[in-house]
Image 1 (tube, rainbow, N blue to C red):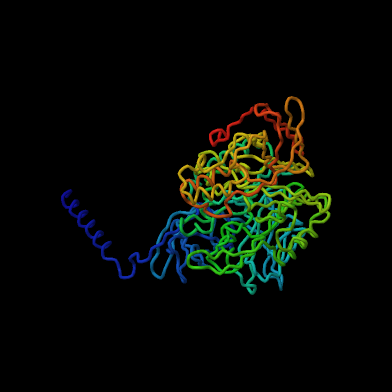
Image 2 (cartoon, rainbow, N blue to C red):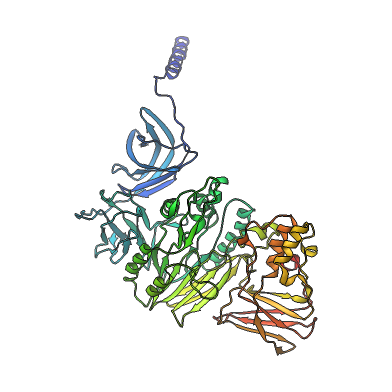
Length: 640
């Protein structure tokens, strides 16, 4: 009997095997997908969820999302497909739990993995005739009144029940709230999610809700981060790890307060989105892997525009889908933050990627929106406005269009305007005339990571200031800030040079340069080429503004100092000399040294005297150096 049972089992297995091989026509896997599934999706019925795919291998028109738990299948409509992502609508049948995520095309279904859904239960809202965008802003199940909501054109506030209604033309294809003080929006990694996508069709009615968390952010720390230019080149990702290590240390030291960060644009480098496959999404992945515990708000820069698209509207599509709106506002403590986009793209893309034209300008839409936004902001609030390109040049002259209109809107507020773009630090104190302090904030990447690439650990900007970022301490109406050099203490606020020790010839600093490149380097470095024994000492005060106090003494006697419009000598030998030494031009004229507005000099009485420096910033922080001379001028001496 056992033998007959054995043969029966074998025959049964063979039968099953044969059945599996003889698949009906049309059931084989005939379509390929390369999809990056999220581990967790939070939302409610009707929400739109975006999913990224690669190499063009994503869903097609007519496909549907299939979510399976146990034996139950739930279908979700795919409502949009772009070149690298698709979006689907959360079905009302979904419940919190794990589902197998598949794509169905006709009779074929391809499983891609598991996704956990956390489904929010929403308060039912009655639609209003004539309003096509509406929703609820709530905290712990209770509506939050007085929250400003906008589509970038119109601005409304939530009523006593936390409800809002918008008549939107959906031009920007998104809606966002101005997060109120004392609350935080939910976050996905570093990104606060205060905005929702719209389908762009004003004839459809869409609901967008937000759930806030109550926090005490009456006092907070804001890290302000200038240009990063991540592109997976010049060892930038390795050097960037030094920056994130430094930032994480600050986050640990300031953990008694709520902390946030705010970028000033050019997190990425549009040219290398394509050639190096490193785009805005790559930047977000890098940041999420390196920094945690804070939300980072983002300003768009010229290199965060897709310059392979045409015109201003199309070039920001990727930024809006992956990062944030291009302009918006939020509130933390007693500070009203406004993020603007002053990069107005005019380019027509070229096949070689060289079409990258833009102007530094706001738009009428932004000015009109900001006027409405500020109508809900009391003049007792501190106003912080960020933009990528500078509003004023170093001399205080306007450097963008619509600056006078923006000044008018700022009137009556204590206003701080923060920009970057130039990889140079300067401050314009216009508090007495316009109530504005303008901070041009240098760069995290220094000179696009080049000086650190050539000399490990020496990452500096075009004006000689170190690569770094700002730490703003916000306590009610009290605003303080300090520049934080990456990898160095706050005390590294200036650098001194002994002119007697500088003879910046190509022979000394670019010995392998041919005659053409030797001549080019010495032309750029002309101020420093000849030897000089007149006992001048130069010093670069990186974050200088006119309220700072400078005292330089020799043998107990204070020396007179003067501003000198010169190029920083350390940048000349750490970037331009290195390029010319390899018989290569600087990669761009924009990357060469700039004449700095914060270099000073004194004249000593001796070539060997020790000078005492005592420099005090506007908040009473004191920075000192006892400068023993002669002081060697070399990369090794300044890279310690």
